Every structure is written in C-alpha cells, then in structure tokens.
Image 1: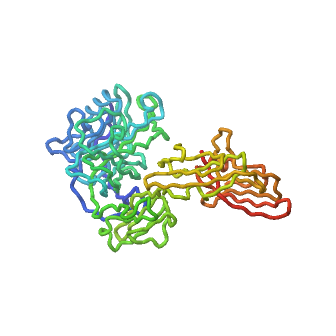
Image 2: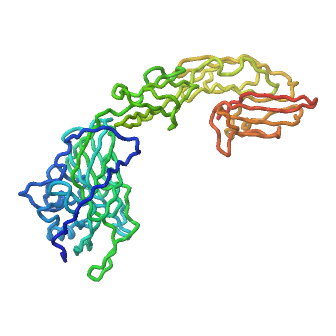
Image 3: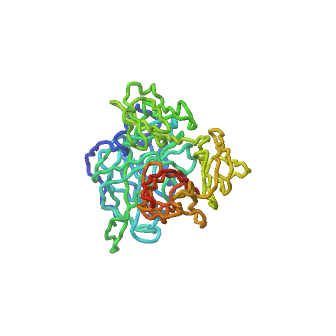
Amino acid sequence: MCRLIKLLPLLLYSVTALSQGQDSCYRFPVKPVSFINNPSFEISPLACTSGYLGQFNFILPSWTTPTNEMLTGYLNACTNFLVPDSLVLLEANTNVYSAFFPIVPQPIPDGQGVVAVSDFAWGGGGLDTYPFRKSYVNTCLSGVLKKDSLYRLDFYVGFGAEGKDYVHGTYRNLVPEFSQSPEKFTLFGLPNCPSVQLPLLGCPSVAGWQALASVVVSGSPASWNQASMQFRVNQDILALALGPSCDTVFTRQQDSVIYMGNDIHQNQYSYFLDKLQLYQAAVPFPVVKLVSGTFCDQSVTLMMQPAAAYAGSNMQWYRNDTALSGEIQDTLQTTRTNYGGGWYQCRVFNDSVCLLSDSFYVQWNAIPNPSLLGDPDTAGCSGDTILLNAFLDSGSTYLWQDGSTNSSFSVSRSGTYQVTVSNTCGTGSSQKTITFGTCHFDLSIPNAFTPNGDGHNDVFHVRYTQQPQQYSLNIFNRYGQRLFSSANPSEGWDGTYKGVPQPIDSYVWSIRYRDLRGTHHSLKGNVALIR
C-alpha cells in the first residue's frame, strides 16, 4: 500500500441555496425539534478515531447503519479525517464492498466529525453489475414523527476531492474515490426502531424502510452544500435513514487509473454528511373531507379542514387538476350536473404557507328510478327481438317479472315487463309495455345491442322495408363526442371508436333521410350498449 498524502489542504466550504425537492407551492412555517440525537456525528474525545460504522466494534453514539454489507464511514478531525492505514487494508482484505474515501472538504459545517456514505456501480461484469450498492446512516429518534404531519430536514452534503492514495487488497484494488455531481439523496423512515442491522446489499426500501422525501444536490469538489427536504409522513415514524437515492445508478462514465501496471475501472463515489436539523410545521396539513350529503344525493359539500387553522388565507379549489373559477372559500358544493364526479383538491396559500391538500374522489352512485327502461310503451316489428336494458351500475341487483336476475331481458312477445333494481341508494321499479305488429313505417331502430362477439345482435344498424334516400347516421356519447358516422343505410356501428371498444352506456343516435315520396325526416333517440 502506498499512502502519498498525510496532511489535508485547508479548503473553504460554500453553501448553496436550499434544494426543496418539491414544487414551488410546498412551503409552511416551521419550528426546530430536537428529535435527532447527536445531529453532527460527534464522539467522545477519549475515542478519537476514524473508521467504519458497525465494523470492528466501532460505535458512533446514537447512529448506526440499516444494512451491514455496505460500509458507512466515520471521519474525525483528530485523525485528520483519515481512516487508519491498517484498518483500510484490513477492510480491503475482508470486504469486497470496502470504500476508500475522498478528501473531506475543510472546514466542516459543525463539530469534529462527519459520516461518509457511498454510491457504487460499475460498468464491468461479476459482482459489480448489481446496481444497488449503497451505504446509509440511520438513527432512532427521541420523539415521534406524527402521522399526517409536515416536517423539514436540513443537512449538509460534502463533495470530496480525489486523493492520491491506492490500496491493494485481497479482493480487489482500491483507487481514490471522489464525489460525482449531482447526487440524489433520499430520507427513509421506519415506524419502529430497528434492533439489528440487516444483511442486505442495497437500499433500505428492500427491508421495509419507507422513502419520505428526496432531493438532488449539486456541488463542486471540496465544497459543502446545504440541502433541505420537506415531507409529510403517512404513519408514525420512529427511525430515520439518510443516503443515496435508490434510483441513482452510475454506469455512464468509468473512472480509470493505472495501479501496479493494471488499468483499473470503477464507478465508486462517496459523499459526506454533517449537521442535521429537523423541523416540524407550525400548521396542520390541509385535508378535504365530505361534510354534508352522500353520493346517493343530488349534491354534496366538501370542506378543507382544519379551516380554523387557515382563517384569512386564500383558497382555490381544483377538479382533476383544473382550477374552478370563483371557488375560493373553504367549502365547495358540487352536484351531479355542476362539476360532477372527479378528484377534488384545495390549495391554501398566504405569505408563509402554500399547501395543496390530498385528492378527494367524488363518485356519484346511480339511483334506481322508474325511467330505467325508457318510455313506458314501445312498438316492435313482428319477428324481432327487443332487448330491455336495466343496467345501472356494477353493484346493483336485478329482479325481472319472471324471476330472472340479469341486467337485461330479451322480449319477442307483446306484453308488460317489469324489473326491480336495488343498490346502496335504494330500490326502484320500472315497467314497459311492448306491442309487436306488422311494420308499415320505413325504418326500425333498435334500442339496444350487445357487441360481445357472439354473432347475435353485435352491431347497431337500422332496418328498413325500402332503402331510404339521402341517408345519414351519427352516434354520440353522453359528452357529445361523435363516435360513428355513415351515409350507408346498410352499415352499422360495432360499438368501437378508433378501434377501442366503448364502455357500457347509453348512446345518442341521430338519423336524417328522405323517403321515396321525397319527404325529409329527422329522427333522434338512444341506444344502450350492453356487453
């Protein structure tokens, strides 16, 4: 082994602007909390050393690593921020994932110590093709991060310069590392305090750690850069881990050096962490709740809560990410026809706050009613079959006059037919009288069809005794979008639009034609698509 540099140059650190990692509307007033013990990674003066956390009984008060196969380093000022030569060589001979850290930027942000986390990847083969080779540092908190509360973590990232040391180990040659820029860091949380390290090669998410927030940090060699993550937890959190994001994989550019006559290629980068500070929001997270009405009613009222916490603030409601004009109060009334269903959110903002609530989904339930079967009387041509469609929604049940329970009923004889439909909104009955006879009119238009590929009633088309003249057929969905158009009276609609099968629903048809007497006709009606 050849150690060429023993004294580190004195380098000033720089501080960049905070990197939020969220959109511009994600700000809130905060107050510092002291849930993180030993936030600047200090050890007792009597234990003056640098090394690898968890290795050879090395203990950093309040801190450990979530996994034990990847090495997390600790470097202290009293050792001139160098891991002892003997320890580097010992690790290189026993751990294929050993780390050879770059030069720590000077001065450090706070105290005497820093931790070093690594982000490994390689463009070659063998063990080095595994992408998730990263190291982290984790701690058990002295307080609980409460579910649905807002927090911010500030911390410093050091980008080290490449040194000139080389180590030859049993498993592989170690070459000096440096800090690739930019690097993405992720904060992980756990609802309990882990008692042991996990034998994992990779990200803490493999072991159940939840990613809370991420931030991309850029820096030049030999600089310290302050970063910030704002986040909300969806469950109580008792432990935090910090390190490289799981989705960063360095395979673009290989670092190449000549060592003992060998050309060595590797992508292995390390970064330094120091001076963590956790903040808790001074305001609660806004939540949209249903405060009056049900989805069986004609209207419901939504409210941003807790409204009292944001009294005097500006509000803006959104539906499906589109701002609703004039809806700037803490409540919103939506009906089946005004705004309708969809995802609703409320944005709250003032001089110190800008937060967007979670999405609340409004989905109106269908209501059974006497008009389910359409007009109460219908005439049909002898020999035809009329399909009565009572489909309301997937949660409804059906009972016809003969005891059948399908959502549709085929009719080929004159008579009165009835169906009773029940769902969460109640029960309703509808009946229809159908009279079959000889057709003396020009056109016969079905009120339902079943494009399910069984060869029966698969296409909606018009029947006629004499071919109409100057004919046009157009079919529209409930939003007015034209799905089908034809000037050929023998051509029908197969229930698709641009090759995509359309959903079960009621569709509007419009027919214009001229009969043999030269009279022009304009007809309009509905057809039910059933699968």
